[in-house]
Image (cartoon, rainbow, N blue to C red; front, top):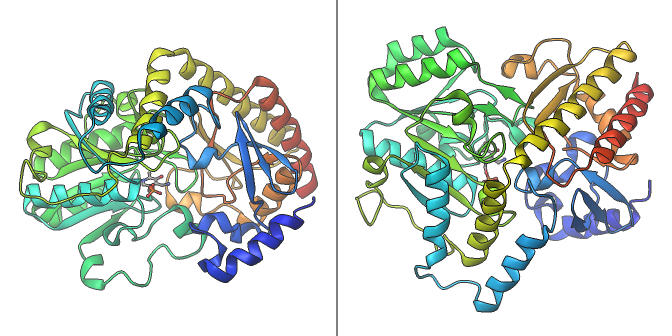
Length: 429
Ligand code: PMP
């Protein structure tokens, strides 16, 4: 495939941007192919600077549940931009978006907008620590919550792909306040709480982990977490940056029927613009400045363009519940087609899917946690990825990421993807 112009642009970028990218996974390190530089996106497609077209299953890593350049989102942005890009003063639309989030997610009575998922989880931890007066945090191996110091420990996503789950630069004094637990392991959690329960401010979890591939937490594990955190007076934080408005309009918590104390959002609530948010019960959120003493702020927080894109996206999702039914149908079709290919070719692979988040793991183990996810053959994944890219299907360039189906994917897109997957798999066995 021709990636000549992308190759040149990547070389240029490397001169002035570390590794040539503003977020590590974009460098395609683990798949040893030059990253295509993207020129444009429309619906389910992205177009690169060399004239290649791809069916996109990354969707900007989750936000684009409606596809690229959705006409209503673009219109809302154009209208907003004519009025100004930022004021650093309150606007009506911030309350509108906050109200939509609160109405969609009953455990959230108040919500604060920030600029990224990283900021959301970082601020949620500060809130949990300030509220409980405790310092320890429990996170799960292979879960990724952004790159703040307390959370970049045994992390998933790019940190896992690039082999640096524990980053240099995180002071040991900070790291020692983060306990890492095994995902889906009730007895491991019991032990942690028996030893340190009185000092634990919060447990943070991706209810459906999407940063070690897709790995849903078991229902009984989630119920156990709710019970043990309540018993010890620790807060339960759901990181729904990826799952919020993705697996269901009311979030992963509606599927588990469990209410966390704090929920973090990002991605979809910004409609493709930089937004994060954290929210929870009024009593807890009222601790945040200026209502309360815990400080957190942002020059561009609640930015009018970001609010316009987010609000329009959520309104479309709310007004068209059939979007979720269709996402389920299309994602199921894709999942079953991929499984069928593997069966026909006599291969071994493991599949996880919740709604429009899915992942094929190159392992014969059932994937339920970090250990089983990392039993995958990543070199086989790299070959598969390259074969798919050549065939016009753009997957996340790592075994440890989710694929996302969007409302803009057609059944023809899905069928094409299944056919090409068969060809790609045939090439690599
Ligand atoms: N939490 C989860 C579950 C995520 O998937 C991500 C990003 N992929 C983050 C937090 C961090 O969000 P951001 O990249 O916007 O900082």
